[in-house]
Amino acid sequence: MDDSPEAFAVPIPYQIAGREWQISPLTNRDIGRFLQWCRECVVDLGRKQISSANGMDQDTKVLILDRAYKQAAQISFDEHNSFIQDPEGLIRLIYMSLRKEHPDITLDGVDAAIGLVKNIEAIALVVFKISGFDTSAATNVANRATGKTRKKKVKTPSPSTGSGLSGHSRKRTAGRLPS
Image: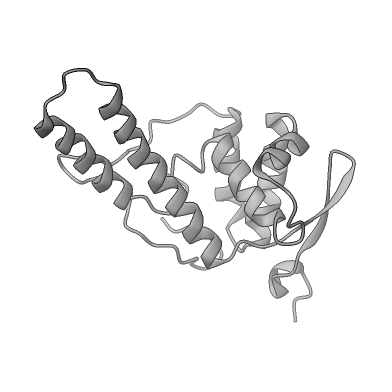
């Protein structure tokens, strides 16, 4: 029997900025909430584009919003999700992990506690590991988010072809991010 925190999905202690925090595994509900936030960001971007354009005709507005909704619907939780490759997305995932044992923590509080961007990698790796994700995938994601490797162009959904990120899968397969 494995006595590691991953086996029981229990919080583990972790020092952040001189304070001990309890980092909890992400649940399927957490992943769903994170994906919903990602989708809302994409749709909000479409709305902002519409509201900032002067003299845009109604057909163009509808087309932009339609494309934003289609692109948002294709977002999945995998290592190619651009929100996971972004420090703000990683901070949100860390926040979701910490708030279970620290209900008074805020997103801004997590950002302040983490401090430097370089600290995100280590904390994100712990969150990903205890949540059952492959740590090599988590390392790649954290490295891209913190700029430690050269960023490769990530294929994003094209409104015209519908190609890009793969599906809506939130399931974890064999302890690794879905591909």
